[in-house]
Image (tube, rainbow, N blue to C red; front, side):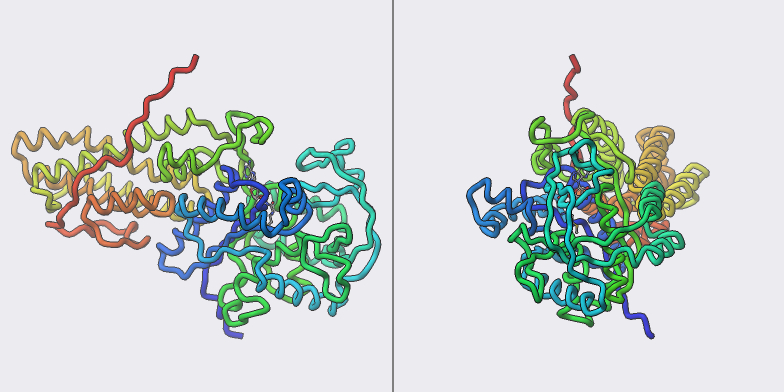
Length: 511
Ligand code: MSP
């Protein structure tokens, strides 16, 4: 069969709409945005999906506490998500809500399909249910009476339930996980393999105790378990059950991104559901770490929940996007602190990058009337900076592909630091005084080229900053491949007005 998938497909989890987004939800979404922008920059067709998880007891409870109907409650909170993603420059291609009719219809279709395959049966369930996680746990998994994931108290529930034959897929899942780089990073893969080896139990996928959900076809006393419903968004949003041509051109997902605590749902339940329906499996699931704030778990009760919009308004969107991916190694837990953010803005964005651009553009303006000079008879120093820049550009591209975002940014800063060192060593202002025009032209051309490449590499992370750099250098639209080539700026290109990229921030003294 001819393969017709032609799209890079990246997803975030669907966020529960029981509160405003915080830096944890922003973290996954920004990472997905970097991947989407990177693949577009490489000239690929991209589909970037995000959205909201709107069914289940957690939402029903949150709405009831406010004295509202769930849908009314959701509609009021939804703009917090859509506005936040807009503010953070998130370039998703589609935003799905699990209350969308198109999604609900497709979920019912899927349910019927695997029911007809014999993978769903009616039984009775008794277990310890955790509402915040929307998940059942075995007694042996609990911490006392509390949930092993979020630590909140669980409730003993008994109900008639439809079950999905998850156990049937144990061997197939192990085979897929062990022979592919399906789960990243490696530590999460090991956790999942151990979990599956302990033996999978069939999964309860309907509730009679809850009303807020998609009704089970054939038995309206049940609603479909919120995770079963929500996971299906990854296929319903791209045409499963409604537009098979579109579906085939996008599925399977290239990568599902998420936090580590929900890898199990994506790497065990989700692929088993797909196997049952005879669909291809996603290529990768990546479980990133958890963010703490100044060393503490983020929580409403502690009052330390950080609003990504507030941070972005105070320090700029790009500074926030940069910081969150530079500070924490993607895959590991990490800490957010305002102090660390300010330090990175001052040293890396203002001093490192901003200064480099400013000095370069101002000198081109001053010594060459704002026209990019020619490079002729370049010396050892120019060749060294050129070679390092091209080498680091290749490395950064590979690192983004591997989702090693912090390493990719480190590589870009190796270019920036080397360029700053080069300016200080070459002292173009002295070359100007000595009227060494050819040498001066070589230096400024070399700096402009390394900044051009830097701007391309930074575009997925800091789209506004990349655009500003390119405008100041007088560049046309760049593609990722242009970062792997030297000598692309044409002599005589008119530069734009020199403007400060990042202002330095006064660092508060610690007591
Ligand atoms: N609704 C489910 C996902 C369904 S996907 C089909 C869910 N929603 S959530 O809103 O609770 O979490 C969404 C994402 O935010 C998860 O990937 C989670 O890991 C991430 N984060 C929430 N708090 C976080 C931190 N403090 N740090 C990093 N990410 C965290 O789970």
